[in-house]
Length: 118
Image (cartoon, rainbow, N blue to C red; front, top):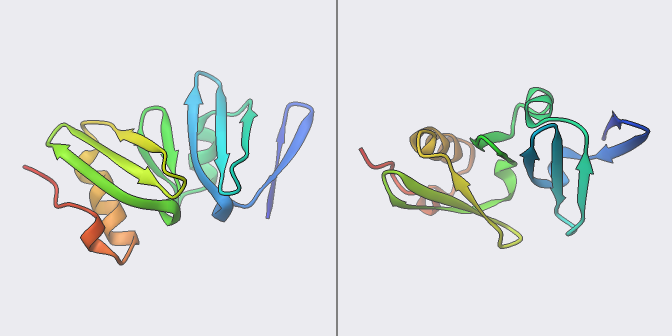
């Protein structure tokens, strides 16, 4: 388990128990598998540099591919991922093919992930 110092508090996050992170300017909300949410004073870039297995699906979202339930592509410019807790996160329109390919490569259940539209 890694320990990250955030301002005056230290949070212990096991990356495997983190579902996803959302960013808002210089703050980051971390959503855990047990339903808890934590606000930290770190950026998404800071976390993405330290947790390279996580996938940046949008300017404001970083997901743990281990907790992605499925990916839904509605059109070539509209898609989202569904997490294990049932929450949906939009995929940036320019990142759709890359995100789907990364998820397909990292997770064996390829039938859950559509082929990118050209």
